[in-house]
Image (cartoon, rainbow, N blue to C red; front, side, top):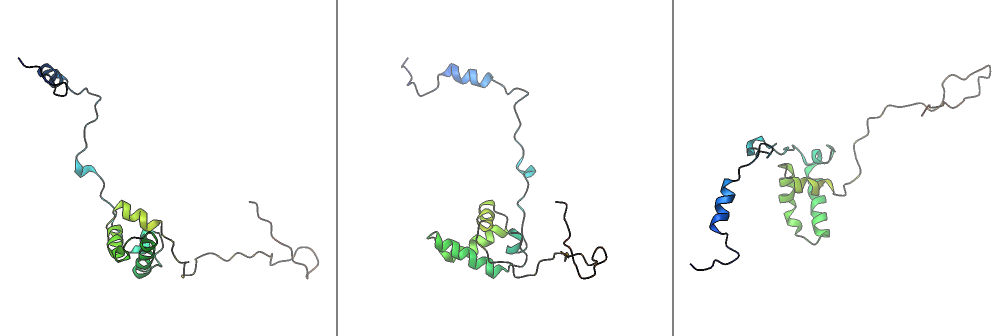
Length: 133
């Protein structure tokens, strides 16, 4: 009988490994259908939480970032389409872009800083409101 090289398993090792059965505590592999599907976005502004941004503005921002990283800016449409399809790497890339300031007005309630009704007898004095925070 010729000696077997050390890198090949010995016949008795294969039989021993075949006899080992998984224990009850071994986690079972989940089927691929149980994995959540990526979120599909309707617009590029929705990815970053700014619906006021059009796809053209986002496309320009992606192209500028690609050019800054010395990559081909003509691939901006491909990156944006991958982000809209929910590809995690592309979504993270788009979320890290430097974007322009919001152009839409912000919906904030108007809060008066001065008390409308002066206190006491003097009608010309106004006092500031105090906030409890």
